[in-house]
Image (cartoon, rainbow, N blue to C red; front, side):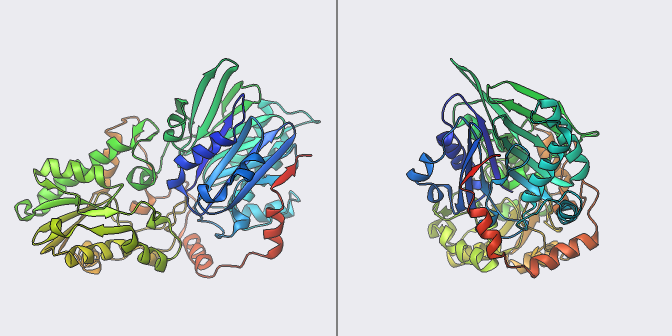
Length: 505
């Protein structure tokens, strides 16, 4: 997962994009980048690190222009090299700069096609650079001469949908023309649009989550629908068209469980409201499986599990307490690269209030259990604080299968629930009891909030891959690549980092 934003305004956009990326920082902590368009010129700055560390005053001053895009990156495909920080740039046709949230499942095949058939060279192992070159090639095929119009762009996106597989929400800036945005035909990754009325006319912002729009004074307009492309020219005129043959909205269920901020609305469903529903359904299951009279207190594992834990305590008529305090200056451990770093960060991130645990039977509620590292550490922390019994509840079902659509869980042997029963997982995390949400209950939690949502990308829970192109052989290849990473060449690093100020031909 990553966070992306694109803006077309009547004034400078560098600060707007920076502020939007701060609001999307939870979606990626590995790298950040901003690219702006002024005339036929692009200016870009990107680097590894948090938004506040990547951009200094001198960097912001070097980003003029009334239109631009930005991204916060969380690596899944490729590596965490600075060469793969986004946006990516290609100078033909017209000059295009692109940022992408998602993961292409056929990027290796496309990369080969780019070289053999389209005569395009890919510098990195980033699927986003592949996506940019596919888009550039299709725009070149759809245009005649040196002019560009929305119909040509929509034709190019239609052709791209036919070639590309996987998840992709995209913002792309075309030098001297405007902002193009589109979403894959399944709508796996979120993308929404907002507007702001000014004396000079409307200005638009597209972002991964509605919180980025609303936090900057833009009015939420709507979600970009699956397969749709939106083009906003530099005068602020908006064009849109459905570019996929058979779009089918299947948003990622894990967005609602963990990835998105609770104050966002994704595809018409409040993330906060869906998490309350998760707590309600989880409470019903706990009633069936456990004697709730033996539980003294319910505690959330902050922060994303808090709504579910509060609703669960209310439904079970149990006391709710905050016994784990979060250090907000430590990043989200789920999206940290490396098991050792995640394990070390758990104790740095959380501290216990011993008086809330001592002598009590505690029901800990987390949003999910992925690798089990955090869960095991927290159970031990509760025991060290004096809990006499530790029960663990997950607001999500067991994560049993790799996710190939942009979430960092691609290796089966990294998933604690893969090949294990609930009882075996319980023993692994050393809890006295464990209760998981049911998959049907999770889907109902979202559908109850927006009944129009009927299909979901929930492959990490049920093993069903909505794009229909994922086989066991594919998963084996992904795991082999993950376990045997290739070093990024110095040439690739140099070629990308030299683009901080690029002229579009």
